[in-house]
Length: 194
Image (cartoon, rainbow, N blue to C red; front, side, top):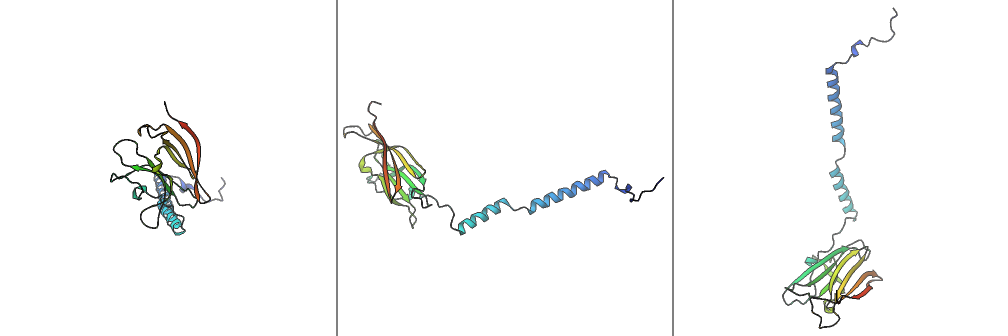
């Protein structure tokens, strides 16, 4: 019989205790690795702090509930019927477009459409009036998308038309161009008999 030049490996036979110890050691290594990983929430708060330090934190759109609208409501107060935020002038600071009317108990009070920006004080300030309530229009569909304000304006062909039932509608858009909001009319139609 020839003897081996290699050491005798008979002591390397595995036992259940050996496998249990190996499994426990591997579990400890996996747990330690998990503890050494960066915390996702810590990473998010760090990136938020970094963004704030670099001035890139998102700015909240103005809250129309805090604005003072130029409506004469005879003590009835105002109602913000619709609102939508958007960066209308490309300055990376959102404006809010608000459709506002007097808080009337019945009927269809005329609406004003206002563009608000966050002022240096606490209250937002009006920077543009897109629809003046003196025009005696109300607003149907309304949206702000891709820096364009769109609305369906509802009006009356004559003073004899009841205020509950506008008989004209016009689809319009406004877009900031050369320092002012430019209005475009998409279509005009009568809703009489509808």
